[in-house]
Image 1 (cartoon, rainbow over the protein chains, first blue to last red):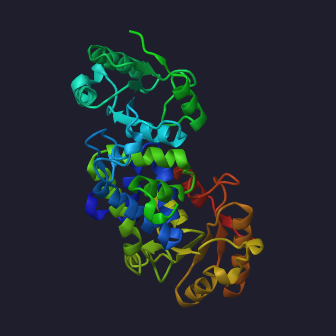
Image 2: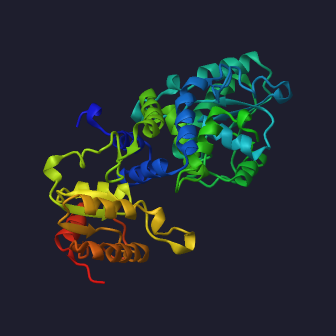
Image 3: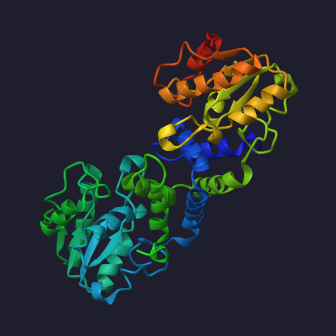
Length: 202
Length: 202
């Protein structure tokens, strides 16, 4: 069926089905919900999605998603504590911010090492991390990649890269369930894992 | 937190949370997915939602959702068989169309009777249904409301209203699981329930 011949409802169902975890039945249910709900529900959702890509950019310092670069955290002098928290994704950063316990700055790697998928060190923001540590006053690097095999391997690799820079490196640990994901864990667990961080040994 | 101070991501999460079955974690996951996915995914979804309300109207004949009134089905002379299928919602009509076995026309009631919620006969399109049957050549009215208590009660009420018009009234039956919903049932079950329709007795 050509794109032009799809009805507005079919077009929406098709677009919704590209989202993770949404099949045809859920997509159909959501489409009819939007038609039956107050006008503002669909209007606000359509606008929020359309404006998302226009308004969100990467922070040049930490590579977090932000409305302007440098982001609020990198531009906040009260957060220049010298603690630098290295995470995989912006969603992990958001999860740590929500816990409200960390007052330093972040560095978003943009993923984990995955040699089988062809993702090597040059695909992550490791070089900008080293450059940042050489340039700024960094008292401690907290490796907050996920406690998954990929996250552990990435933490190990980053720690090895940092050895020459003589900066103390710690790893979040106690509190995170093994195999868990920072993005989905509750705020208390995130707080515990930050409080109980330990010296990273390689 | 005021609407103006929400970030684009927070605004999207808030808008997504208004959808049925989507909580904060799913909404957050979808928002970050849209940021990481190819641009076209978010663009097409945003457009499909924004255009949905502009482009979809109610058919003046059958009250189905359509791009222009009368809808394709009401405007198709080959479907003037005299069979009129009465359904609760446009999604039920779509489900019967998908089964591909019914070649007559439809009438969308717009819900079911629900006295406890204050939904009476005047809130459904029952008067336009009677008017349509008086005006057009209708050989059979198929009551295809859902086999739920509300759907059965509505079918009974409509059948009573139709008695004076001396038009044969049938009820879809065999094949539909009791307590099920036309919107979610498979095409074979829908086809069976149409083939095995029975005389409606009140």
